[in-house]
Amino acid sequence: MEDLEAGSLEYKIVREFSADLKKEFREEDNKMMKVAELKRIEQRNGTMEEFIQEFRRVARDSEYEERLLVEKFKQGMNKVVRKKLMGVKRPSRSIEQ
Image (tube, rainbow, N blue to C red; front, side, top):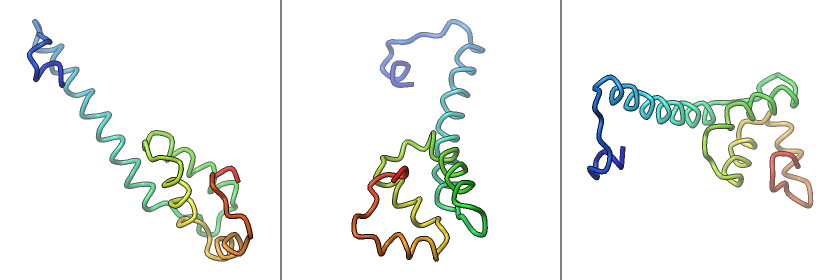
């Protein structure tokens, strides 16, 4: 899109332009959906392993940095588990920890 706006990219076929435009918006929409889904994801009554798998699936294309992902992960955890982890002397710095 930046190349097109700068005038350094030309399309000879409208269909080609339309396909590229749709692709660009689809990718951006997908990122926004992942971010929204990250805000809503919760462990509830599922196992920690199920929550981790689901969280990783959603986080994969969110482009969130690791630190923010850890915060979102903690927020979505079961409250009892989260309280126990908060009492640990050395807090986790990654989801794996």
